[in-house]
Image (cartoon, rainbow, N blue to C red; front, side):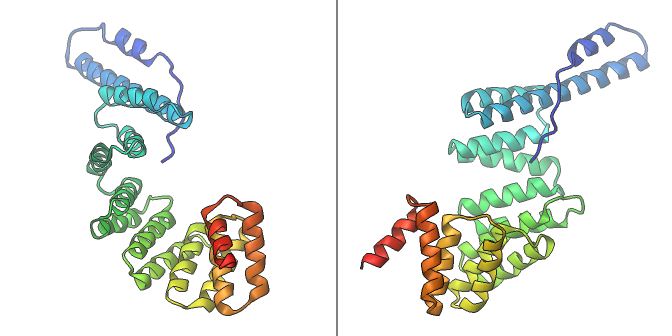
Length: 260
């Protein structure tokens, strides 16, 4: 989730200055409004700082800033999302789940929050529980990246062995975003695992044409061409893999199979 960049502009000082007026209900309403705005601004600032600390590798500092953000505003959804990612990164899965779920509870129809929780549940082995959250994500008309949710949903089904369901979701992702590299790779993988190698080749070629080369993609291309009996094409993938990713697990796997 992209958090908008903000600057600290002395909003707390402004709010406190405005709070010096006493008297009628109008002043009381203004006081509550200023306090609420100041709290949300504080949450935004510390969430932004926490995200920056995370990007710089200072996870302890990031956690402190994100906890501070939630002290300012316990219902600030972006803070729950970022701190959930941080807890997942440091393998504190119970806390990560708590914050992913809190983000959904704060806005049950929000695409980002539902996709994030679905992806987390799938990664922690709860594919059936994850599925409804992906469906809620793509149902959000304001969700800007539904292809991502369809890709995650497909990957989740693929992990359970539901190749047909996975392929259907990947195709929905590709229909929305024809240059979705992850979905193209994953549907090629699903088809290959079903021994539908001709169609698998078509998708891995589309993936390769995007120029987003990866060890997994090159290895899959090699395996597809090998199964089709195209030795020259398989060798081309193998050489690219060994040249560009010589230390990868996939390159070592090809080396091992070649030496047998």
